[in-house]
Amino acid sequence: MKTPPKTPPGPPAAPHGPAAGRGSVPRPRPPRGPAAPPVPAAPPGTFRLAAGGLSVLVPRRPLLAGAALAAVLTAVAAVCLSVGEIAVAPPDALRAAVLGTGSPRDLLVVEELRMPRVEAGIAVGAALGAAGCLMQTLSGNRLATPDTVGLNNGATAFAVAGIVAAPASLLPSATALTGAATAAVLTLVLSGGAGQRGYRFLVVGLGVGAVFGAVANLILARAEIDAANAAFAWTVGTLNARSQTAVTVLQAGLLVCLPLAVVLGRRLNALRFSDAVATALGERVRPLRAAVLLTSVVCAGLAVAVAGPLGMIALAAPEAARRLTGPGPVPVLASALAGAVLTLSADLVGRTVLAPLEIPAGLVTAVVGGPYLLWLLLTTRTRRTP
Image 1 (cartoon, one colour):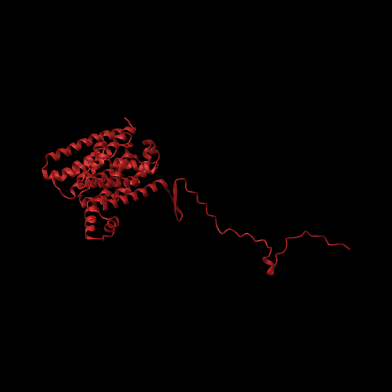
Image 2: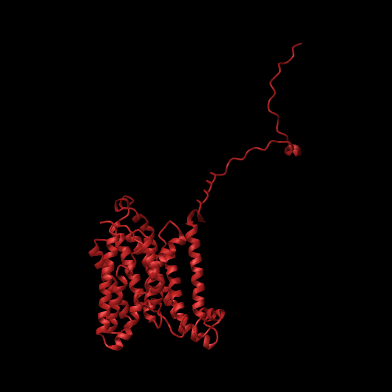
């Protein structure tokens, strides 16, 4: 009797019934779609802000520096609203400034006397800080600011001439802009440009500023006593009794110029190299320089039209901003915030140190900024290119 051949054992049959889930091997499910790529970690020193499928890297140190400067500016503004010959408690001052409520005395002191000075100081300081940052980066020289290249003196001379000729509310703003533009054009033409000739641009600007300063003194000397007294404030720099129309014009100009300055500051990173390298990187050098110079002229001219030539703000604010933000992008916003803090601080010191005698803010910045300028001249090696 033959036995049937043995067949190789096959795979075990799948169990059925209630025992199907016991000891059975789960089958792998097919993937539903392509797996999402892993999100790379943010580089050191940056934040990653993601929304949907987009993400932006934000430098950590400039962001923290900007937040710190904004907090300091808020604190200084609160002190300016509270301190004076008539003291107002900080909560009452903030309530009167923000909500418009409080006692009649607090509303009069805060809204009518101190709030306009604070608004003017913030706007003027922000304009001078941004203009100084752009001018220094454009010329490649830390000493090149609207103060030193003649823009402020040109704006002052034209503003004084406008006040002496026809003391209208809008005339100082228009004439100051014209004077700043005239000084910028003269300095640019006589120096041969603001790019690789940063040292020459600075020296020519000092000469142009001296000429316009002499013109302003000559106009004051030949003017009538009432007109000379009205124009004298534009020669020292002060925030006292500023024209609200000029402040409004400056604030409107900042709404346009400050975002433009931030965009131009990003593009100015390429001008830290030579013109050939910047052109190779795809940057149009001449239009960029013209836009930066025009923005600086508008900011400086409108600031001088409000407060006069507040010296050293445009020099010290960008330097403080660079020390806080560190190496990286051009710190336009940080320079604007630092300029506002310095301007309000100078006005606060001038109002309170010798009260009831008031010292103009321009004299305070000159006294404090003079030694700083000397230190900067002794420790800075300027770039000299023939």
